[in-house]
Image (cartoon, rainbow, N blue to C red; front, side, top):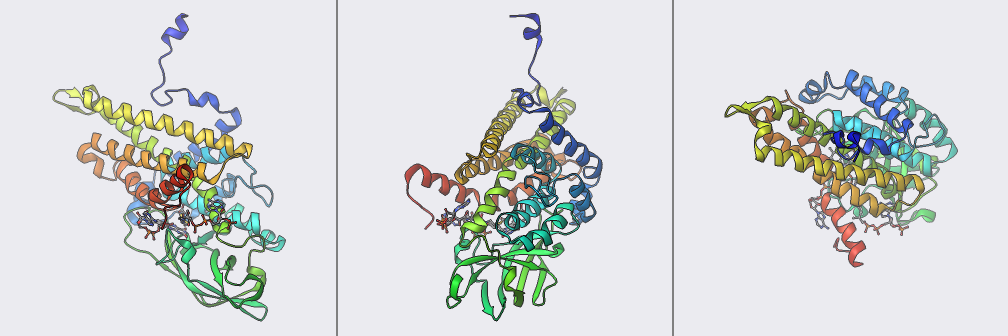
Length: 401
Ligand code: TGC
Ligand code: FAD
């Protein structure tokens, strides 16, 4: 063994040296987003969370950084790789899940369906403005009575001459109240000729007559993010508002695969912040005349957090490389979403215990991340739904019903 090898202790924040697996370009993306977040988000995020405020003024800045629809090509999008997109999500969510949520919804849930399934006109009208942050998008799939089971949706699209008329409501919609455009999934009426009874996507400008939103108040999770109900009452849109390229539940579910992939990375950002906060705190806070970090029980907690963070990052990077190689299946994304969000939430909760009472205040980021991750565990497919998706792969049996 050389002296250099003998002396090279692993870095507590990059124990397995995963940084070395990233290219210089990937590290540049990560560091650029990290610097942006440090300058523009971290100084204010606790106040924004407390006030229930989404910092809308940051949206054009996110656009300028190329973070909106960053993994899409053309129409002003950055054309970044899946790994670069993931690294950006991790840095955004290290600040707050609400910020990553905004970017996920804008890029993966509003822009992706238009990019993948839209007409040329829909693409030209919306993608450049959404990429620059001049316009904001949202994605309406969930309804009050149909969350995990969107196939049951009641929102209906009825053909009327050269238009469609949309009726129904969508619940829990991120960005709903601030969006300029909503991608709304609706069932065409059975007597509607070509697309009879099929679930279709509609690109709905939010200033359309018959479209309105209602804020969902009193959240104690994702407070720095706008969550709304979309209400469509006789909302008339031209037939050209329908996404021509996809029919059936495959449409919205394929968008979810894009957004869920970002969460695989993002959740680790929230967990990393909590781990690093707890590590620093444990080294400086003394009880019984010694730093908390000197107690065996505290060390065990820190080690377990570090193990899961590092394992989660390897999973994220592996899935990212698969996505870039074109070999990622939706079920692989379920593996990452289930594991990484579940472990991230456990890390945040464990980190909270190390801070004791201080851990419950917004003076530290931990309780905010913990509360945010409760939403992340639920949206984009709950942990139970992802468990069942994986269970189906293992057994060949669908156990959803
Ligand atoms: P199933 O019969 O399995 O599938 C219907 C069709 O869809 C295809 N498919 C997928 N395609 C691409 N990506 C995926 N992930 C796909 N999953 C399924 C499938 O191949 C089939 O295609 P085809 O052509 O054969 O028709 O559908 P199912 O009704 O049995 O549903 C299964 C289930 C339960 C897994 C699905 O409904 C589900 O994933 N439920 C969870 C719902 C969900 O995740 N909602 C999220 C709403 S959006 C959100 O939460 C945004 S939060 C944003 C933020 O703030 O970050
Ligand atoms: P339910 O489906 O009622 O589930 C309740 C519980 O039952 C869960 O634990 C679930 O796992 C379990 N369960 C359900 N079915 C089964 C089963 N077959 N087997 C075992 N357990 C089961 N939706 C959008 O369309 N767009 C958005 O932008 C959006 N943003 C969101 C933002 C926030 C902050 C939140 C909290 C949600 C958002 N959602 C959005 C909605 C989100 O996708 C749903 O909350 C989620 O899909 C779960 O639906 P539900 O809340 O109705 O729970």
